[in-house]
Length: 176
Image (cartoon, rainbow, N blue to C red):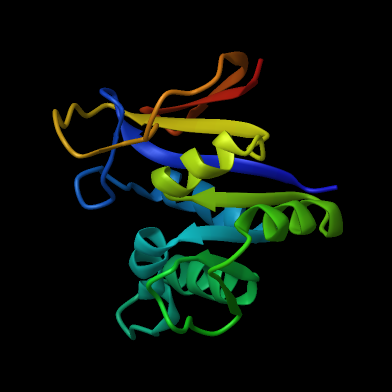
């Protein structure tokens, strides 16, 4: 049975904004290894549209960026959206019965399934489907934006912390 994990970079004050958070080589390599190890990813519409960047090759990308794109493209993706009519390669659109689809993925797959997007994570948490939360804190205070938690959460239990590079700390929690 697969484990559903919500993980995202965020500021010290709890906001997720990929354009505002620094991304050095160490954290980028970390994310590359994370993506390589996934059984698949579940995206909300907004995060999927941000990540579609990796569907197109850019000749100016470094070798690591090319590796990330290849890893992202090769993994199965499920995109939860009522507004999208189609999705890109290796992606499946989920517009109905999200709970049944995600429960089915968890039962069928082995390993880790990543959840991307705070609103989707909230919906899946409300359904009792998120098994773990990994908060990647960057030493930045944004003061505005989209919060990591898009609503109240059930009690969580701390299970681990890791330093990623010199300045990013990952805090891992599970539902209590």
